[in-house]
Image (tube, rainbow, N blue to C red):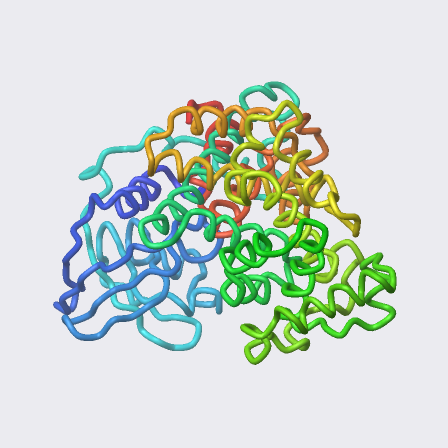
Length: 441
């Protein structure tokens, strides 16, 4: 919503968004309304608020959009009656009802509710901002060039929000699940290429960490890697391996024979419930992202950790090593040959899984030393190569300007920005939009 829409309309929209308008009201025709969810502010891209839930007459729950104008005639004056994009509108909120009809492009009549003139509500600080300057193809290129430090702080703040949300979700599982099992599931999830995350999660449920660690502890050190590989690949439905798959996994004939023998000897608990091979996406997947080398990396990590302090402890201890957790993860993955892990995948797994998990455990147990170690790693962890989401968010924020070195913390901020603010068009809540418009967020 820009200056051209007039600040008073922003006042009404902000009042609706902030909950300053009543949660129960009636249409101008006397139909009772209960506002279940006010919707997501769209920054004027189509209807003002999307995904709203309104209960009509106490019995009919409708989902759709809400449009707001100073007067009812604003609907036709803005051409919404000719625009199919407004056929989702289920409620027209106005400051003053002037008797005009609100009819959608598809012919449906939209109920109207009057909330009073704009001067009834407090004018927000951003009412006079020129919102036309943000929300287009690029929002803050000027800020990126003139004050990159302010932009970095905004991205770090968004990255911290994403980290806190992930950590809270993991902490909520700690009362009912062993911590190491949660981290094991996170590890496999992080090893799953985007198309293979679901089967990786299913494998984590099928083969819990405790079962693998028990097997490894009962196996001589020299045979542990074959047991870990055999159980994971067998339960995942990859055995027997074809010659092409063995080549992809960099396994020689002796390695293949040893892991297949381990599956025959130790795989009975999972043989019936093994995943079907068809659940894995293998076509058009780059070799490093293929599930087979990723599973071999998981086998190497668990085997190497079993020779030390165990998987969970080894992962948390990596936060305090001089080399850092990403290098520690790569070292564990490469400890028994095989494809190992690339730098970018290791960095992503530390940022998305290990650090949030460590903070969750620290909060749950009151371990301040662990919280400090995880926080230090969060501040210094480098960013991995940008994925499609980060590239899109970077263009949206800075256009052709460089964002500089923002680290994993800033990169996670870009992901949060794209998924939680840019895509749903929540520009009014965006700290980067506020900074670009020259007002403190």
